[in-house]
Image (cartoon, rainbow, N blue to C red):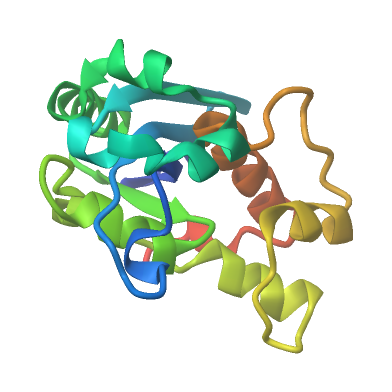
Length: 192
Protein backbone atom coordinates (compact mmCIF):
# COMPACT_ATOMS: atom_id res chain seq x y z
CA UNK A 1 0.00 0.00 0.00
CA UNK A 2 1.31 3.43 -0.83
CA UNK A 3 1.47 6.08 1.90
CA UNK A 4 -1.36 8.54 1.70
CA UNK A 5 -3.17 6.54 -0.98
CA UNK A 6 -6.91 5.97 -0.92
CA UNK A 7 -6.44 2.44 -2.25
CA UNK A 8 -4.44 -0.63 -1.39
CA UNK A 9 -3.08 -3.18 -3.82
CA UNK A 10 -3.33 -6.90 -3.15
CA UNK A 11 -2.49 -9.86 -5.33
CA UNK A 12 -4.74 -12.89 -5.10
CA UNK A 13 -4.00 -16.44 -6.19
CA UNK A 14 -5.88 -19.66 -5.89
CA UNK A 15 -5.47 -23.38 -6.27
CA UNK A 16 -8.43 -25.27 -7.68
CA UNK A 17 -9.73 -28.79 -8.31
CA UNK A 18 -9.18 -28.34 -12.06
CA UNK A 19 -9.27 -25.91 -14.94
CA UNK A 20 -13.00 -25.17 -14.62
CA UNK A 21 -14.11 -22.69 -17.30
CA UNK A 22 -10.74 -23.15 -19.10
CA UNK A 23 -11.11 -26.94 -19.45
CA UNK A 24 -12.18 -28.42 -22.77
CA UNK A 25 -15.03 -29.02 -22.39
CA UNK A 26 -15.59 -26.55 -19.53
CA UNK A 27 -16.48 -28.08 -16.17
CA UNK A 28 -17.37 -26.90 -12.69
CA UNK A 29 -14.38 -26.85 -10.35
CA UNK A 30 -13.88 -25.41 -6.90
CA UNK A 31 -11.26 -23.47 -4.97
CA UNK A 32 -9.17 -25.55 -2.54
CA UNK A 33 -6.65 -22.89 -1.46
CA UNK A 34 -6.68 -19.11 -1.67
CA UNK A 35 -3.92 -16.65 -0.89
CA UNK A 36 -3.12 -12.95 -0.84
CA UNK A 37 0.04 -10.84 -0.88
CA UNK A 38 0.34 -7.14 -0.03
CA UNK A 39 2.84 -4.58 1.21
CA UNK A 40 2.72 -3.25 4.76
CA UNK A 41 5.42 -0.80 5.84
CA UNK A 42 7.65 -2.01 2.99
CA UNK A 43 7.36 -5.66 4.07
CA UNK A 44 5.68 -8.14 1.75
CA UNK A 45 2.97 -9.92 3.73
CA UNK A 46 0.89 -12.93 2.77
CA UNK A 47 -2.06 -15.00 3.92
CA UNK A 48 -3.47 -18.27 2.68
CA UNK A 49 -6.02 -20.81 3.71
CA UNK A 50 -7.04 -24.25 2.47
CA UNK A 51 -10.77 -24.74 2.06
CA UNK A 52 -13.25 -27.52 1.40
CA UNK A 53 -15.31 -26.72 -1.72
CA UNK A 54 -17.67 -29.68 -1.29
CA UNK A 55 -17.62 -33.44 -1.94
CA UNK A 56 -18.73 -33.15 -5.58
CA UNK A 57 -15.38 -31.60 -6.52
CA UNK A 58 -13.36 -34.51 -5.08
CA UNK A 59 -15.54 -37.54 -5.83
CA UNK A 60 -13.93 -40.41 -7.72
CA UNK A 61 -10.47 -38.83 -7.81
CA UNK A 62 -11.83 -36.04 -10.00
CA UNK A 63 -9.33 -33.49 -8.62
CA UNK A 64 -6.28 -35.75 -8.23
CA UNK A 65 -4.38 -34.30 -11.21
CA UNK A 66 -4.82 -30.72 -10.05
CA UNK A 67 -3.96 -31.60 -6.45
CA UNK A 68 -0.67 -33.23 -7.46
CA UNK A 69 0.50 -29.84 -8.76
CA UNK A 70 0.04 -28.02 -5.45
CA UNK A 71 0.79 -30.90 -3.07
CA UNK A 72 -2.60 -30.85 -1.38
CA UNK A 73 -4.41 -34.11 -0.67
CA UNK A 74 -8.12 -34.91 -0.46
CA UNK A 75 -7.68 -35.63 3.27
CA UNK A 76 -6.24 -32.15 3.90
CA UNK A 77 -9.01 -30.52 1.87
CA UNK A 78 -11.80 -32.52 3.54
CA UNK A 79 -10.47 -31.49 6.98
CA UNK A 80 -10.36 -27.78 6.05
CA UNK A 81 -12.95 -25.12 6.78
CA UNK A 82 -15.81 -24.94 4.27
CA UNK A 83 -15.30 -22.51 1.39
CA UNK A 84 -18.08 -20.29 2.77
CA UNK A 85 -16.13 -19.72 6.03
CA UNK A 86 -12.84 -19.08 4.19
CA UNK A 87 -14.63 -16.65 1.86
CA UNK A 88 -15.84 -14.72 4.91
CA UNK A 89 -12.24 -14.61 6.26
CA UNK A 90 -10.98 -13.39 2.90
CA UNK A 91 -13.53 -10.59 2.61
CA UNK A 92 -12.76 -9.49 6.19
CA UNK A 93 -9.03 -9.33 5.37
CA UNK A 94 -9.68 -7.33 2.20
CA UNK A 95 -11.78 -4.83 4.15
CA UNK A 96 -9.12 -4.64 6.88
CA UNK A 97 -6.41 -3.92 4.28
CA UNK A 98 -8.33 -0.99 2.79
CA UNK A 99 -6.96 2.38 3.90
CA UNK A 100 -9.37 4.58 5.90
CA UNK A 101 -12.01 5.90 3.52
CA UNK A 102 -10.49 3.96 0.63
CA UNK A 103 -10.63 0.55 -0.96
CA UNK A 104 -8.52 -2.42 -2.00
CA UNK A 105 -7.81 -3.15 -5.64
CA UNK A 106 -7.45 -6.87 -6.35
CA UNK A 107 -4.87 -8.04 -8.85
CA UNK A 108 -4.18 -11.52 -10.12
CA UNK A 109 -1.41 -12.96 -12.22
CA UNK A 110 -3.89 -14.80 -14.45
CA UNK A 111 -7.10 -12.82 -14.03
CA UNK A 112 -8.84 -14.67 -16.87
CA UNK A 113 -8.45 -17.90 -14.88
CA UNK A 114 -8.81 -16.68 -11.28
CA UNK A 115 -11.60 -14.10 -11.44
CA UNK A 116 -14.40 -16.41 -12.67
CA UNK A 117 -13.75 -18.75 -9.72
CA UNK A 118 -14.06 -15.98 -7.12
CA UNK A 119 -16.82 -14.09 -8.89
CA UNK A 120 -19.41 -16.67 -7.86
CA UNK A 121 -20.64 -17.72 -4.42
CA UNK A 122 -19.38 -18.06 -1.78
CA UNK A 123 -16.51 -15.73 -2.76
CA UNK A 124 -18.44 -12.88 -4.46
CA UNK A 125 -15.29 -10.77 -4.97
CA UNK A 126 -16.75 -8.70 -7.80
CA UNK A 127 -17.83 -6.31 -5.06
CA UNK A 128 -14.17 -5.22 -4.99
CA UNK A 129 -12.46 -3.37 -7.86
CA UNK A 130 -10.00 -5.37 -9.94
CA UNK A 131 -6.83 -4.04 -11.50
CA UNK A 132 -5.20 -5.09 -14.76
CA UNK A 133 -4.03 -8.66 -15.30
CA UNK A 134 -0.42 -8.99 -14.16
CA UNK A 135 0.31 -11.72 -16.72
CA UNK A 136 -0.64 -9.41 -19.58
CA UNK A 137 1.52 -6.64 -18.12
CA UNK A 138 4.44 -9.05 -17.69
CA UNK A 139 4.05 -10.33 -21.25
CA UNK A 140 4.06 -6.74 -22.59
CA UNK A 141 7.35 -6.01 -20.85
CA UNK A 142 9.14 -9.36 -20.90
CA UNK A 143 7.91 -11.25 -23.93
CA UNK A 144 6.17 -8.94 -26.39
CA UNK A 145 5.13 -11.86 -28.62
CA UNK A 146 1.89 -11.66 -26.67
CA UNK A 147 1.83 -15.36 -25.89
CA UNK A 148 0.76 -16.81 -22.59
CA UNK A 149 3.55 -16.28 -20.04
CA UNK A 150 3.59 -18.57 -17.02
CA UNK A 151 4.50 -17.11 -13.64
CA UNK A 152 7.67 -19.19 -13.23
CA UNK A 153 8.93 -18.15 -16.68
CA UNK A 154 8.05 -14.49 -16.09
CA UNK A 155 9.88 -14.52 -12.76
CA UNK A 156 12.91 -16.08 -14.47
CA UNK A 157 12.92 -13.50 -17.26
CA UNK A 158 12.64 -10.64 -14.76
CA UNK A 159 15.21 -12.07 -12.33
CA UNK A 160 12.66 -12.49 -9.54
CA UNK A 161 13.75 -15.29 -7.23
CA UNK A 162 11.05 -17.64 -5.99
CA UNK A 163 11.29 -18.23 -2.25
CA UNK A 164 11.87 -21.77 -1.04
CA UNK A 165 8.57 -23.64 -0.85
CA UNK A 166 6.42 -20.92 -2.36
CA UNK A 167 5.88 -22.40 -5.84
CA UNK A 168 2.37 -23.69 -6.41
CA UNK A 169 0.92 -22.50 -3.12
CA UNK A 170 -1.65 -19.74 -3.30
CA UNK A 171 0.24 -17.32 -1.02
CA UNK A 172 3.58 -18.20 -2.59
CA UNK A 173 2.35 -17.53 -6.11
CA UNK A 174 0.63 -14.31 -4.99
CA UNK A 175 3.85 -13.09 -3.34
CA UNK A 176 5.94 -13.98 -6.42
CA UNK A 177 3.45 -12.17 -8.67
CA UNK A 178 3.58 -9.11 -6.40
CA UNK A 179 7.42 -9.04 -6.50
CA UNK A 180 7.33 -9.56 -10.27
CA UNK A 181 4.95 -6.63 -10.76
CA UNK A 182 7.20 -4.40 -8.67
CA UNK A 183 10.25 -5.51 -10.66
CA UNK A 184 8.68 -4.70 -14.03
CA UNK A 185 7.59 -1.25 -12.89
CA UNK A 186 4.42 -1.72 -10.82
CA UNK A 187 2.16 0.56 -12.89
CA UNK A 188 -0.71 -1.50 -11.49
CA UNK A 189 -0.22 0.10 -8.07
CA UNK A 190 -1.88 3.23 -9.38
CA UNK A 191 -5.67 3.37 -9.35
CA UNK A 192 -7.66 3.49 -12.54
